[in-house]
Length: 264
Image 1 (cartoon, rainbow, N blue to C red):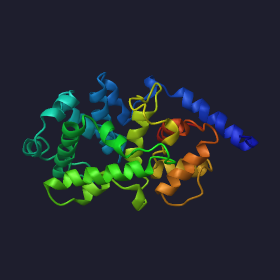
Image 2 (image 1 turned 180 degrees about the vertical axis):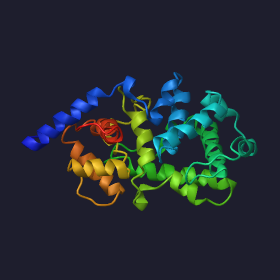
Image 3 (image 1 turned 135 degrees about the vertical axis):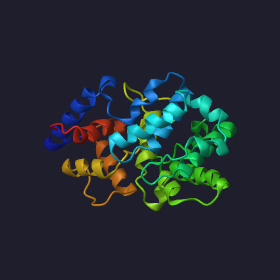
């Protein structure tokens, strides 16, 4: 693909920043937590939990994740395997994170426990909905979200916190946190784990929130005004000009350029 001078300059800058951020440059980021572990199941669980709570200030995110990992005694898989909902209500008593109540958090862990008991991992549930013919992971995320919500609903009505926790791209959500988790699981480099090698990185969609949207507007990677799945697809499509096989590799750099007030 032939790039304009402006596009070539942007690609070079993005590649520079992509190469700058290695494992020594992770902090502050929720990705720090799954990097504590070696066992793939510990990594997957820690990463999923970290992504679910990845909204709000970094300080607030890391405070919540620190408390949760302390409760899990740094053994995520062992904790999930033995988890019981009634005990979970006591574990998470008094804990909240922005829109999530302690009951929302207890029900989240209930659903993760059910998934590991019935499917062996989050990956094997997600792969039931993944089809190579799909342009990206939109449909897979939607079916996964519906299934996850259905499991959670076994413990009562679905709260607004739960709806926010596990959104559906078919309803327009950018699904920032799910796309973040999928980036960590599918891509493989110094930051991302590449545990789900059944899915090519070309199928990923960039995680977009208000912060990333502002940066991408300045870089002219999107012309859309509001954060949505369509915006995330548009940004991803433009990044494919720079790397058709791995467009989301630029996500960490784009996010942290603004977060750390770096000069682009």
